[in-house]
Amino acid sequence: MLPTPKKYFVTAAAAEGATKLNAFDNALLAARIGNINLIRVSSILPPGTEYEPNLVFPPGSLVPTAYGYIISDVPGELIAAAVGVGISRESFGVIMEFSGKCTEAEARAKIEGMIREAFDRRKMEVIEMKIAAVEHRVVHIGCALAAVPLWY
Image (tube, one colour):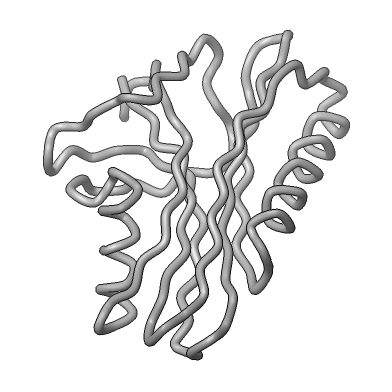
């Protein structure tokens, strides 16, 4: 069992690559999470977790991460990804991820709506949101990625 994370940040980046996997890897590198092993997690930010935008991970670390991404090999296509963290007054937070064929602004708006719905459903008040979003116009093979890595 993993310990409960105590720190996090939000990140979004896009990149091209020679293959779909290389585009994904290059987006991870651009997002500052390319040299770690992501453990995909769902949508809850543990109580008391602190935002630390300059968080650095030891290479090869196993890092719980909520993320969304989209890869396209259609030249000229616009893709976007976004993540958001909603912070509550009560206790824990909620993380939402989105990716699609849209603009950065549309992805950001989608995340904000998703966070509001998640809080409404839980009957909690959202007091702050941290959102990261990116859009990318595909040249050859592109990836747009947004993530919330968590750390101890």
